Image (cartoon, rainbow, N blue to C red; front, side, top):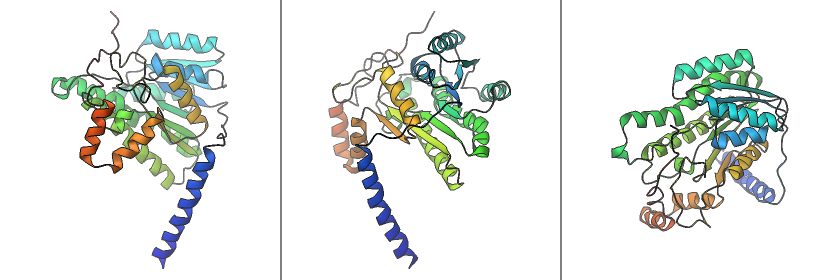
Length: 305
């Protein structure tokens, strides 16, 4: 009897939630107010981190900016203040180092208070083939892109759980959903980030902490300099993304409590294909979409002298 009732429940909810999703395609989602929230962004000194900070600057939030670059972080703080942010705090933090993450997190809690929106955005890419990547760079990729998320969650999630209020955001990658030739360490780190964020989200729901929302962002390459030289075989279908567009979409996803955000929208279709087509056909499609050659001309962001 339990099997019958539970199966019936699943069928009814499946119909309801599919209808709900269809209706939401035509009705704009309600946006929540984040006024008074404390937003911490890692990797805020440049790229998407800086642009997200600028998006939050007009929303009456307290901004906490983390970056390994003091110069970049100060510039971001200057820009967000110019745009209207009244409460901005900058901290230098190397997210690859667990003791430093914990130390700076404790400093934030003492000086600013509890973080209520945590955006794990800091990331690096080596751009080297697996056998050419030095062990030290592989380890650094995993430390920044994945393990740092563990330590920031450990630092700031307890306060969110105590109040059953908060939002956890993981800026992952489409490379965290499907393997890419030439990005073995990066893909591994982003797969880890996605899996970690999904697992913690389920833990929170199982504990009844439904007031803590989660958003996982998986974009294609973004034109921030990090992936300079990379190209798209079919740019109309899978474009290199504009950074400002991505930042706006991420903040909008946070305001609407969107759980998954894939950019561009064509990725939703491609990820669905990945899970249903035969492996050999998947390889043919991967070659067609250019997945074997995305990194052929990779240069990456030029390092400052």
